[in-house]
Image 1 (cartoon, one colour):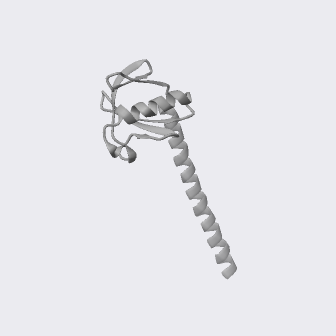
Image 2 (cartoon, rainbow, N blue to C red):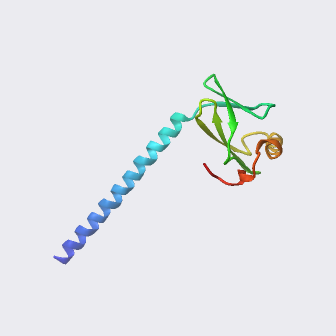
Image 3 (cartoon, rainbow, N blue to C red):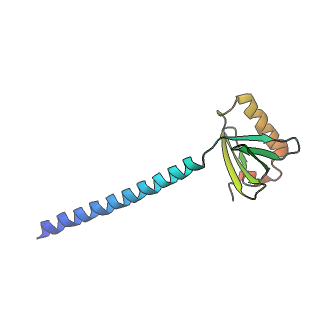
Length: 124
C-alpha cells in the first residue's frame, strides 16, 4: 500500500511539474510571437534641434527622449515618447553600428541628449 502511494505521489508530482513546464513554454511562445509581430525595421534620426525622427513602415513620427534612457560603452537604452503619445524603447548595442559612430553618439548623448542625471537609473 505504501509503495502504491509513493508511486502515485511521484506520478502526481511529475504531472504537476510537466504542467508547469508546459504553461511556461506556452507563455514563452506567446511572448516570442508577440515580440516578432511587433518587430519591424525602424529608421531613427537625431535632429539638430535635439528631437528625434522615427520612421516606421514609411510613417514618420516626431519623438522626444524620456527619462530612463541609459548610455553605456556597451549598449544604450533609448526611451522615446512619440508624437502620438505612444512609447518606444530601443536597445542599441555597440556592435550594431560603426564603433566611431557609436562613440560620437555616446558623446553627443552625454553632452546634449540627456538633461538630467536620472539617466543612470532604469525607470519607467
